[in-house]
Length: 191
Image 1 (cartoon, rainbow, N blue to C red):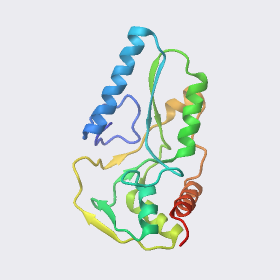
Image 2: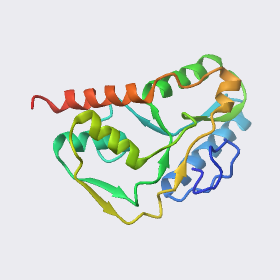
Image 3: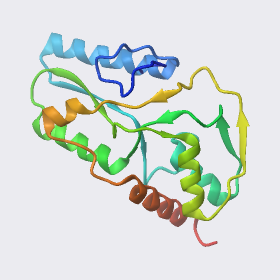
Image 4: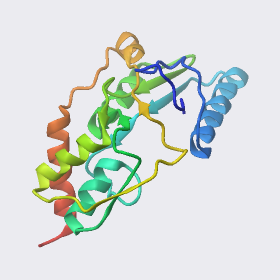
């Protein structure tokens, strides 16, 4: 939604300059929801989760960490677009759920937008290396030129969530990566 910007981490009031139709659609939906609040008074909390990962996501096509585990365990080629130095704010799905719960329990009026992330970034290369370590499998990675829809860095500023709801991520990334690896392995069936 924010596009490629030099600012990091990105606060909710950073300019939105999406570089894909998907990002532009998400911004449009937020604007429609804020209009509904304006016209009807319905409380509207728009959430901007960074890059969630974890159990119950089969890793088919989207969500780098889950895709890495699924492809590693199946012996499939992993596509890396760009040089792997792209930075993302990967957040365990349990933390996303706790953020939604925090907002749902206390957001009763108004219209606002909230980033849901960790506030820290990791490179695609780093998370692939950790996935390799956890599975004991070396990736068959194939590199492709960077795509215009992939931003260099996307790390979210989560101060607003902390200040407004007292929320902050609680799950250690290494624990979440291990649980994700175990879950993806359990879905693959017997070896």
